[in-house]
Length: 212
Image (tube, rainbow, N blue to C red; front, side, top):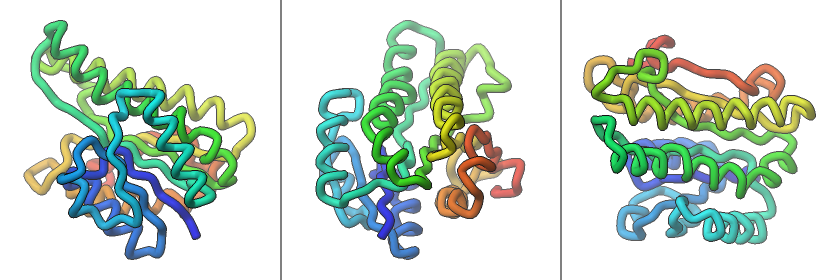
Protein backbone atom coordinates (compact mmCIF):
# COMPACT_ATOMS: atom_id res chain seq x y z
CA UNK A 1 0.00 0.00 0.00
CA UNK A 2 1.23 3.46 -0.93
CA UNK A 3 -0.21 6.74 0.33
CA UNK A 4 -0.47 10.04 -1.52
CA UNK A 5 -1.31 13.34 0.14
CA UNK A 6 -2.74 16.10 -2.06
CA UNK A 7 -2.39 19.54 -0.52
CA UNK A 8 -5.05 21.70 -2.12
CA UNK A 9 -7.10 18.84 -3.51
CA UNK A 10 -10.45 20.49 -4.14
CA UNK A 11 -9.70 22.13 -7.50
CA UNK A 12 -9.87 20.47 -10.89
CA UNK A 13 -6.20 19.53 -10.79
CA UNK A 14 -6.53 17.98 -7.35
CA UNK A 15 -9.55 15.97 -8.40
CA UNK A 16 -7.70 14.71 -11.49
CA UNK A 17 -4.65 13.66 -9.48
CA UNK A 18 -6.87 11.95 -6.91
CA UNK A 19 -8.72 10.00 -9.60
CA UNK A 20 -5.49 8.87 -11.23
CA UNK A 21 -3.83 7.64 -8.06
CA UNK A 22 -7.02 6.02 -6.76
CA UNK A 23 -7.34 4.14 -10.05
CA UNK A 24 -3.72 3.03 -9.68
CA UNK A 25 -4.46 1.52 -6.28
CA UNK A 26 -3.02 4.20 -4.01
CA UNK A 27 -4.60 5.41 -0.82
CA UNK A 28 -5.34 9.11 -1.30
CA UNK A 29 -5.56 11.74 1.43
CA UNK A 30 -7.13 15.00 0.25
CA UNK A 31 -6.39 18.21 2.15
CA UNK A 32 -8.26 21.45 1.57
CA UNK A 33 -9.73 24.46 3.27
CA UNK A 34 -13.39 23.81 2.47
CA UNK A 35 -15.32 20.62 3.31
CA UNK A 36 -17.97 21.16 0.64
CA UNK A 37 -15.39 21.59 -2.11
CA UNK A 38 -13.49 18.50 -0.91
CA UNK A 39 -16.57 16.28 -1.06
CA UNK A 40 -16.33 15.40 -4.79
CA UNK A 41 -12.66 14.41 -4.52
CA UNK A 42 -12.09 10.68 -4.97
CA UNK A 43 -10.11 10.03 -1.80
CA UNK A 44 -9.88 7.63 1.10
CA UNK A 45 -9.69 10.53 3.52
CA UNK A 46 -10.70 14.18 3.22
CA UNK A 47 -9.44 16.64 5.82
CA UNK A 48 -10.14 20.33 6.20
CA UNK A 49 -7.06 22.31 7.22
CA UNK A 50 -5.69 25.80 6.71
CA UNK A 51 -2.28 25.04 5.22
CA UNK A 52 -1.17 28.58 6.00
CA UNK A 53 -1.19 27.48 9.66
CA UNK A 54 2.03 25.56 10.32
CA UNK A 55 0.88 24.06 13.63
CA UNK A 56 -2.44 22.87 12.20
CA UNK A 57 -0.69 21.38 9.17
CA UNK A 58 1.77 19.52 11.41
CA UNK A 59 -1.08 18.08 13.46
CA UNK A 60 -2.82 16.84 10.34
CA UNK A 61 0.40 15.27 9.05
CA UNK A 62 0.90 13.42 12.33
CA UNK A 63 -2.68 12.15 12.21
CA UNK A 64 -2.24 10.96 8.61
CA UNK A 65 0.92 9.03 9.44
CA UNK A 66 -0.66 7.58 12.59
CA UNK A 67 -3.68 6.33 10.62
CA UNK A 68 -2.02 5.11 7.44
CA UNK A 69 1.44 4.27 8.70
CA UNK A 70 3.29 6.01 5.88
CA UNK A 71 3.25 8.75 3.26
CA UNK A 72 4.96 8.11 -0.08
CA UNK A 73 4.04 11.25 -1.97
CA UNK A 74 2.90 14.81 -1.42
CA UNK A 75 1.57 16.82 -4.36
CA UNK A 76 1.14 20.51 -3.60
CA UNK A 77 -1.66 22.05 -5.65
CA UNK A 78 -2.56 25.06 -3.54
CA UNK A 79 -2.19 28.09 -5.71
CA UNK A 80 -3.33 31.55 -6.45
CA UNK A 81 -3.03 34.08 -9.23
CA UNK A 82 -3.58 37.81 -9.09
CA UNK A 83 -2.22 40.52 -11.34
CA UNK A 84 -0.28 43.46 -10.05
CA UNK A 85 2.62 44.44 -7.85
CA UNK A 86 1.00 45.95 -4.75
CA UNK A 87 1.73 44.97 -1.16
CA UNK A 88 -1.63 43.32 -0.46
CA UNK A 89 -1.44 41.16 -3.56
CA UNK A 90 2.10 40.06 -2.76
CA UNK A 91 1.15 38.98 0.75
CA UNK A 92 -1.84 37.02 -0.55
CA UNK A 93 0.20 35.24 -3.22
CA UNK A 94 3.06 34.40 -0.91
CA UNK A 95 0.59 32.82 1.50
CA UNK A 96 -0.99 30.74 -1.26
CA UNK A 97 2.06 29.75 -3.27
CA UNK A 98 4.89 29.67 -0.73
CA UNK A 99 3.63 29.46 2.85
CA UNK A 100 1.28 26.54 2.20
CA UNK A 101 4.07 24.69 0.35
CA UNK A 102 6.56 25.38 3.12
CA UNK A 103 4.19 24.19 5.84
CA UNK A 104 3.01 21.03 4.08
CA UNK A 105 6.49 19.99 2.97
CA UNK A 106 7.96 20.48 6.43
CA UNK A 107 5.06 18.63 8.04
CA UNK A 108 5.54 15.55 5.84
CA UNK A 109 9.35 15.69 5.57
CA UNK A 110 10.04 12.81 7.95
CA UNK A 111 7.35 10.59 6.45
CA UNK A 112 8.61 11.11 2.89
CA UNK A 113 12.16 10.26 3.95
CA UNK A 114 10.97 7.22 5.91
CA UNK A 115 9.18 5.96 2.79
CA UNK A 116 12.56 5.43 1.14
CA UNK A 117 11.00 6.34 -2.20
CA UNK A 118 9.15 9.55 -1.36
CA UNK A 119 8.19 12.27 -3.82
CA UNK A 120 7.32 15.91 -3.20
CA UNK A 121 5.93 17.80 -6.20
CA UNK A 122 4.67 21.31 -6.83
CA UNK A 123 3.24 23.14 -9.83
CA UNK A 124 5.02 26.32 -10.87
CA UNK A 125 4.72 28.63 -13.84
CA UNK A 126 6.72 29.55 -16.90
CA UNK A 127 6.35 33.16 -15.78
CA UNK A 128 9.29 32.54 -13.40
CA UNK A 129 11.67 32.63 -16.37
CA UNK A 130 9.77 35.36 -18.22
CA UNK A 131 8.34 37.73 -15.62
CA UNK A 132 6.32 40.72 -16.70
CA UNK A 133 5.41 43.80 -14.69
CA UNK A 134 1.68 43.06 -14.53
CA UNK A 135 2.43 39.67 -12.96
CA UNK A 136 5.42 40.72 -10.86
CA UNK A 137 4.01 39.52 -7.54
CA UNK A 138 2.87 36.22 -8.97
CA UNK A 139 6.33 35.62 -10.46
CA UNK A 140 7.95 36.48 -7.14
CA UNK A 141 5.75 34.02 -5.25
CA UNK A 142 6.40 31.18 -7.68
CA UNK A 143 10.14 31.88 -7.80
CA UNK A 144 10.23 31.79 -4.01
CA UNK A 145 8.38 28.47 -4.00
CA UNK A 146 10.85 27.03 -6.51
CA UNK A 147 13.74 28.19 -4.33
CA UNK A 148 12.19 26.35 -1.41
CA UNK A 149 11.93 23.19 -3.49
CA UNK A 150 15.53 23.44 -4.66
CA UNK A 151 16.61 23.75 -1.03
CA UNK A 152 14.66 20.59 -0.23
CA UNK A 153 16.20 18.71 -3.13
CA UNK A 154 19.73 19.59 -2.09
CA UNK A 155 19.07 18.46 1.45
CA UNK A 156 17.57 15.18 0.29
CA UNK A 157 20.28 14.69 -2.31
CA UNK A 158 22.83 13.88 0.33
CA UNK A 159 21.03 10.69 1.36
CA UNK A 160 18.97 9.92 -1.78
CA UNK A 161 15.87 8.94 0.18
CA UNK A 162 13.28 11.23 -1.42
CA UNK A 163 12.92 13.51 -4.42
CA UNK A 164 11.61 17.06 -4.76
CA UNK A 165 10.27 17.94 -8.22
CA UNK A 166 8.90 21.08 -9.87
CA UNK A 167 6.36 20.95 -12.70
CA UNK A 168 6.09 24.06 -14.86
CA UNK A 169 3.05 24.98 -16.92
CA UNK A 170 1.80 28.07 -18.70
CA UNK A 171 -1.52 27.41 -17.05
CA UNK A 172 -3.61 24.40 -16.12
CA UNK A 173 -6.55 23.90 -18.42
CA UNK A 174 -7.66 22.83 -21.86
CA UNK A 175 -7.22 26.16 -23.62
CA UNK A 176 -4.52 26.94 -26.16
CA UNK A 177 -1.12 26.69 -24.50
CA UNK A 178 -2.53 25.06 -21.38
CA UNK A 179 -1.72 21.76 -19.73
CA UNK A 180 -4.83 19.59 -19.16
CA UNK A 181 -5.27 18.48 -15.58
CA UNK A 182 -5.27 14.87 -16.80
CA UNK A 183 -1.76 15.41 -18.17
CA UNK A 184 -0.63 16.78 -14.82
CA UNK A 185 -2.11 13.73 -13.10
CA UNK A 186 -0.25 11.40 -15.46
CA UNK A 187 2.97 13.33 -14.87
CA UNK A 188 2.57 13.00 -11.10
CA UNK A 189 2.00 9.26 -11.40
CA UNK A 190 5.09 8.89 -13.60
CA UNK A 191 7.34 10.29 -10.88
CA UNK A 192 7.89 6.78 -9.54
CA UNK A 193 9.17 5.54 -12.90
CA UNK A 194 12.59 7.08 -12.22
CA UNK A 195 14.86 6.63 -9.25
CA UNK A 196 15.18 9.23 -6.52
CA UNK A 197 18.68 10.07 -7.71
CA UNK A 198 17.56 10.63 -11.31
CA UNK A 199 14.55 12.71 -10.33
CA UNK A 200 15.54 14.77 -7.33
CA UNK A 201 15.84 18.48 -8.13
CA UNK A 202 14.24 18.19 -11.56
CA UNK A 203 12.20 20.96 -13.15
CA UNK A 204 9.82 19.36 -15.63
CA UNK A 205 8.27 21.62 -18.26
CA UNK A 206 4.98 19.92 -19.12
CA UNK A 207 4.20 22.32 -21.93
CA UNK A 208 7.58 21.61 -23.55
CA UNK A 209 6.83 17.88 -23.39
CA UNK A 210 3.75 18.35 -25.52
CA UNK A 211 1.12 18.16 -22.81
CA UNK A 212 -0.92 20.84 -24.56
